[in-house]
Length: 231
Image 1 (cartoon, helix red, strand yellow):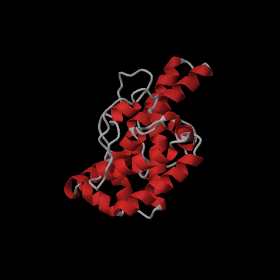
Image 2 (spheres, rainbow, N blue to C red):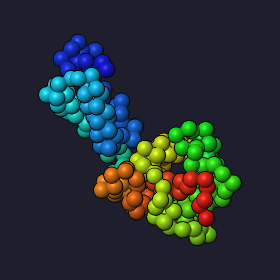
Image 3 (cartoon, one colour):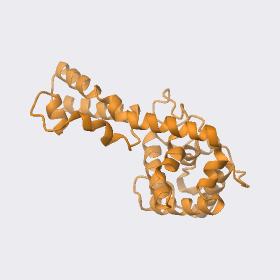
Image 4 (cartoon, rainbow, N blue to C red):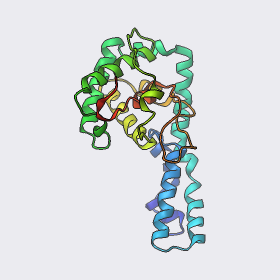
């Protein structure tokens, strides 16, 4: 609010030069900025602020969009370059091979089971089967030895209301689990930011994710199965 107060013409207590470094290590994209501006607009409308004032305020807030999203864009580009140079099998090796991926997935599930935003997707008698299938899927996607033979990601999540919100929550936990397992920020970035350009189908008005995931961690998100009916 300190930045906005100054940006809207009030007392200035925040240096705008701090916006970019403050957001650099966050995974904030244009999608998140748009969502924030939508929430701001709706809030203003609810308290009867006139439309012209809302438009002016949104324009001011939107002026710092690039400062907020630059970190994601740059880190994603660097991660994609490393991935292209090293190959997916190198990421598999850096994650610690079979034992490392298993450790990561174990830690990830510990996080998911405590997260109220997501844990409803990970309940039921087949939780152990889901965990094993997800581990095998990650290993296979990263170029490691795997016997994964489950259904395609599209088929698995076709009837599920998985939105960008769920993906963002899941990826937050992926990053936390990777860091908890001792991986450096570059490895975390490569696992998270080397994402497909079209995971989200904008023509889908209910917000479901229907794209064809090409990146392992986004693919893992599509293994969300209500009541654990994965296989």
